[in-house]
Length: 109
Image (cartoon, rainbow, N blue to C red; front, side):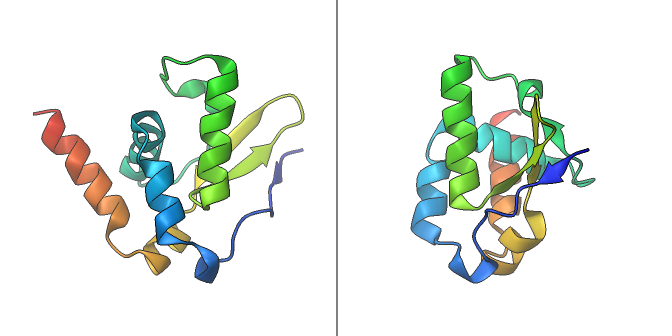
């Protein structure tokens, strides 16, 4: 049975500086952009992202995103999934996810 981590910041505690530092890395920004572009808000397995980094570095990136309050973990015991905290992010930083998706769309033309 999956358990969603409740160890994430409350909406009011999301800090813009922390969020921007997390998004400053191109790999973490790519993860959030992929999640933001999928409006179904489905959960994803961490391995499903095409990140050209080691498993240890991948773990670090997802921990940084979680600590910034951008994602929450879904624990399956032997593997983890993640879900974008879209509603919380939109409530605290309206338009941020739209900007990320627009930036990505502009770079792929």
